[in-house]
Amino acid sequence: MLTEIELYIIQRVKEIRESRGLTQLDLSTRMGKGVGFIGDIEAPSKKAKYNIKHLNEIAKILECSPKDFWPEKAL
Image (cartoon, rainbow, N blue to C red; front, side):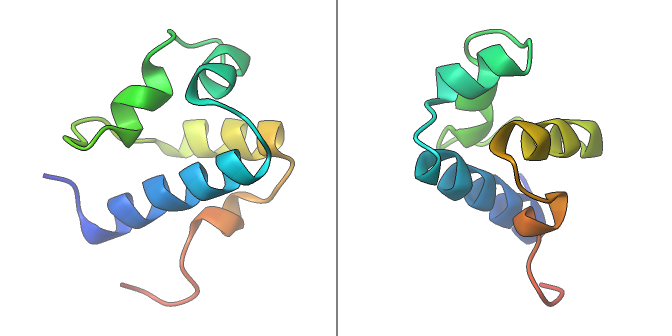
């Protein structure tokens, strides 16, 4: 089971990804990952999660700051 902060970050990445018009496949491919990488993380079962390296790489692709994925206050 993922923590509240992990779920928050997954949702924020998804929101920003969608606002940029990228699919899960687009982002997975740009990261050099398998086709289901992002889908596995965003899946309702949420068994996978991002690590810091992933978040930094995603921020580069989405042209934002890694800080954009985090809440302003602790959860």
